[in-house]
Image (cartoon, rainbow, N blue to C red; front, side):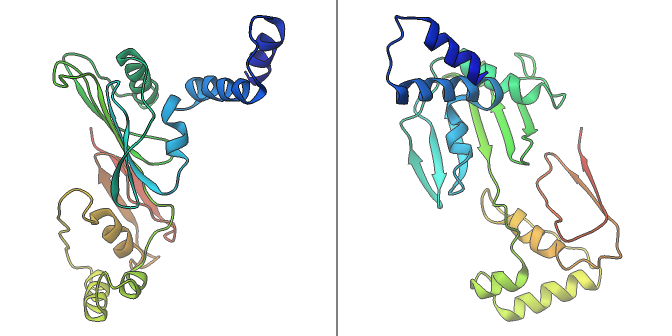
Length: 215
């Protein structure tokens, strides 16, 4: 695709953009075809944990825990719908006027949620929740003073005693982070089966995990 774009610039004498502009246009085309269009640079930013699209309005992100407005936006509602279809189609989900909301998961494991009209009054709305590549352990949570040593010992004992644990909290309160930390304490000889709306839990250290998504 890059070679085809470069040939277009070379063959058309009216296209007199500078080399930097050409590379920017080519990168934009490649992102639109193979990636997530205008938000591809945001997805590659490890400091961003959430991307919020509201029709053609400027895109907002959560960066290092703070809401931030960007200069990036989609050209039309149709371009946002194309992004939604690009994501939900391969995973067997559907979204239309009869079913105007959808949850899906990107290949990186990121959570993808979309709402379209008539529920979304000002154009399609998309929220992408990213996750840190590193899974925090209970010991690291204690070192960061998220929990104290006594709570760490209690949680570790609860998991190793195979007790039931209910983790609850609001959005972005750390539920998935805590569950991932608890999973690190499960005996490697155990078999883990998970059922999630959209798979978010990660078990980098455990050898036997069956991951399921609800329907």
